[in-house]
Image 1 (cartoon, rainbow, N blue to C red):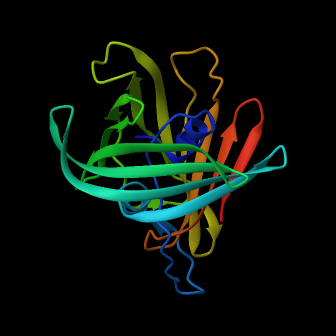
Image 2 (cartoon, helix red, strand yellow):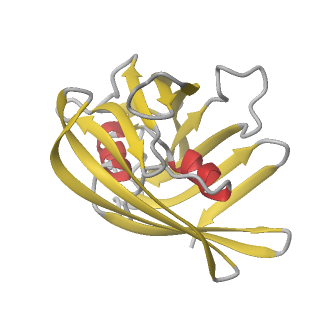
Length: 228
């Protein structure tokens, strides 16, 4: 499963990826202290359902904007399995000039939510192994490494490009909202990964609606993307 953080890395290096988030906003009871949040529903909103969004940052005084649109594709076959697919189109602009457009598909099954991998328009073919289930409900300060991804240059799987893990965590944002963060590790095949790590965080309420987002890229320097 490609995350938004990995998508941004790929876009900035003129590669391709797949992922997403949902922009719906539902207000919770103002004074209620919420301690448990629906992690699985939030991930469904982030990675599998229709949405559009923009993230931006300034790099060397240049405005970098990532426009994303996710479209569910329904039943598909991936790696000889019946799965569901969600297509993502990500367009990167620098100072309003398009520098990259990428298209890809994440593959998953439901009930429970399990990610199986992704394909991209540059030929990448990824096989995901979900090592732990995604919880339906989690408490503040819970976290777990839940997925290992093997990324190949194409569907023949003869040339492995990278291996990395993904970890989710839940941190309090306010008395009735939390940050659900997905961290992608460095490439485990390399002693040093020039792309570094990425952490994408989604502000959620007690219903799992996505209220806000940001992505932090940690490499030679730290770059923060915020939702517009």
